[in-house]
Length: 154
Image (cartoon, rainbow, N blue to C red; front, side, top):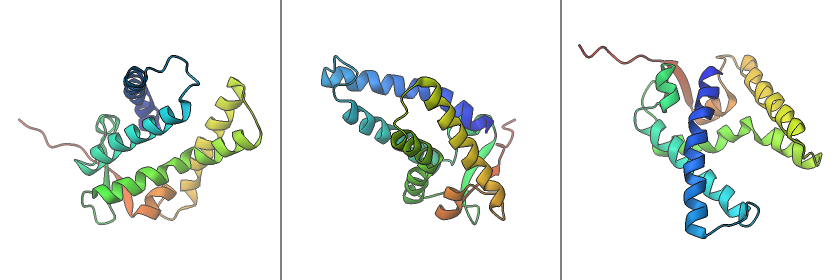
């Protein structure tokens, strides 16, 4: 979970720069105008970020800091297709909470924050039900996270 939080901090910068680029290229003057296009653009940017790093070395910047590597079930590097599948299925961390917010018509900052945090923690706890303690999107994609530390280059 610490790596998850660190990844969020790093992605804040990626999304800020991407959002600025989008608003500059589209001449977006108001945050709600073109909101769905911006969301789709950021979804693609996040997909490119994760698929690239997972399929080229198996680690994002945060995963390198925490010595975590993504591999397939046999310990081999993941393909771009498998990384894309994992990216799409990893939205299971958020989709139930976002659906609850939408169905409940909740709009306040405290409500959104508490429902999202509860959803993320709930999804993380689901790993305890898996025989190998894997997240369900990893089990479905045939991937797993492993502890990995680069060899000393001395």
